[in-house]
Image 1 (cartoon, helix red, strand yellow):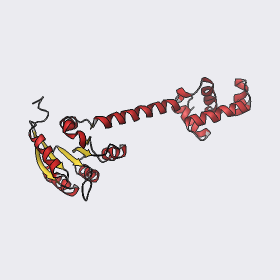
Image 2: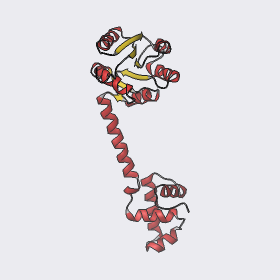
Image 3: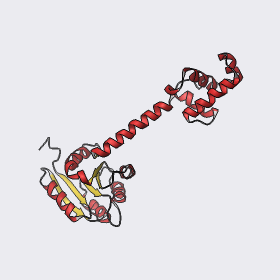
Image 4: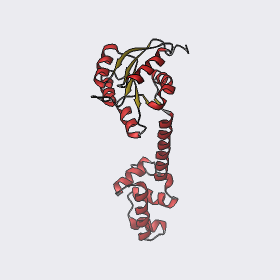
Amino acid sequence: MEGGWLMATRVLLADDHRIFVESLRDMIGRTPGLKVVAEAGNGEDAISLFAEHRPDIVILDISMPGINGIEAARRISAIDKKAGLIMLSMHADKRFVAEALNAGARGYLLKESAFEDLILAIRMVLSGGFFLSPSINSQVIGEYAQALKTFADSGPTALKPREKEVLRLVADGRSTKSIAKELGLSIKTIEAHRTQIMGKLGLRSIAELTKYAIREGLTSAD
């Protein structure tokens, strides 16, 4: 047994598809240190069985009759915030993933890859980490990378040197006429710069511009 990481790990299975549950139970039963202590066919029973057995890992199907897996996960988390919840689903849609994680799940497996990834998912959750099926993980990482790019494209580095200068002077409380005189530009040019800056940063007022400039260290609050 690898470092004893699965020692005495007790598992609750909750899925309304009996053949699938039996296959998972057999696989878990063949894994040293893992033991299925209870099985549920719906969300309500999963909650009751969790309260009774307090297993280390709870494997929940999202689509179950009555109380669904996500709501069951939410209620189990209310009983024990440290519950090791792993969701099973046919859905790779990010909305389901987000709802599951918000409900307290620390793992999200697509049923198509559950047999390949389940033991690794249990290992990750027991160690305090998270596990997503590889295809979902790639999607999440891709969206995170895009979010970072969007932030970079809308952040202070996206502003041209002249725009940063105008932003700093606006945040310092200087009038448009004063800024135009200092930079040797027309009032209309300064107004155009200000409009463009606000558009790039998604800001709507001088007050928001000022707060942004202070937050980014382009000016001080003094």
